[in-house]
Image 1 (cartoon, rainbow, N blue to C red):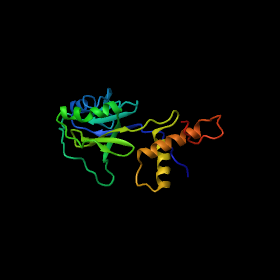
Image 2: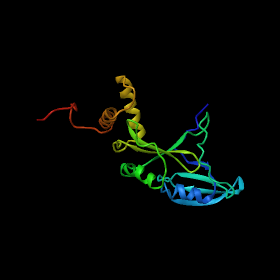
Image 3: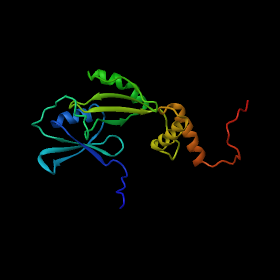
Image 4: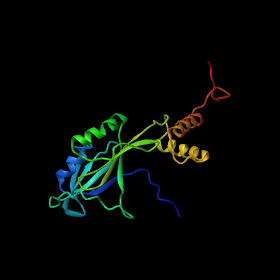
Length: 193
């Protein structure tokens, strides 16, 4: 038996209401360019809208002009989607609350997640959306996931309850030491003063 190895998210498809509500939210609020549209090939009465969330992948929405937005929170039971998180730059994150408030969109306020900051709000159809901003940049050649994996190892070894900035900094140092050779025989910390 062998795995079917995933290599990334190809797309996420949501069931939307009318076409304009989707365009107004995904492009008009979150800035995702509306890049493609065709009929839903499995249900001709619906349209299939495609948005680029910023990494060339896709968020797609099935729309139907007979459906109206219902802001009731989407189900969160077993097998349901709890929320979708999107990466934003630090500069954008620092403006998120103000920009949501300008539209009258209620939000959670900034949530400290140790390794990132988050803000949550619901789309017009009750789906919880998270805007997330990492507190670190991975070293060249590394991914955020690799830094988090290493920070997790460090955190567990120290018996700490969750990843904090010290674990991130130590993880980045460890990854650089492993990936980048040095002519120094001893790379231990020093005080040259």
